[in-house]
Image (cartoon, rainbow, N blue to C red; front, side):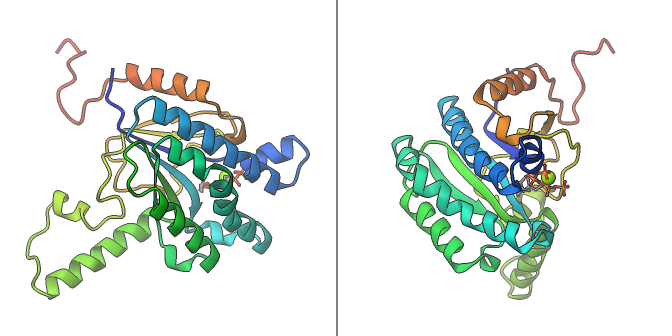
Length: 236
Ligand code: IPE
Ligand code: IPE
Ligand code: MG
């Protein structure tokens, strides 16, 4: 068994799911919201400490105005439907990404959910919204340079650099799952996945289920994590 403290998911395939079902893309995003709820409740029951879900990338602004505006409305749909249940399940909501570029209503909804759940001690449900891994690293470098200029620090180690990232209070990412067949990172958690295990599944996000998460974790548990050390399973 491998420890699983931090699970990260690239929730991809909402558009393809909609197409397959002869529905508008927005219907795929809507269905995907319910799946976030199901996976959150299940991950919490499994005792996972943190679930980071990629909801909107810094590149997703390239989509049509209609689609972007629909996506920006989804936090409201999610929290209106599920905030009560998140509280009952002791789930704490967090967010990574550049909040300042989000519509003010989206910011307000996210801030409210973060504030309401801030004392909860169960699973951290961490939404990556307007998140980009490169953007995060550049921000961190700039913030470090500011501190250096101000004389607050004069050394830089991996541990110190972590404190400048959005994920500073979160455990290392153990497992990254991407749904919908695509085998790429799409600018997600670039710094944090140095030693994560990856699972790519063909299931489209709106069809992803707690049972499939169990299967992914089963596979993860059979992986031999090595972290650059000697691989003890080999005979040499
Ligand atoms: C993931 O589904 C949701 C977001 C990126 C916001 P997509 O909308 O990317 O779905 P596909 O890749 O077109 O199927
Ligand atoms: C990644 O999916 C972003 C999110 C899931 C939010 P995309 O659908 O945007 O990624 P690409 O464009 O296929 O790489
Ligand atoms: Mg996609």
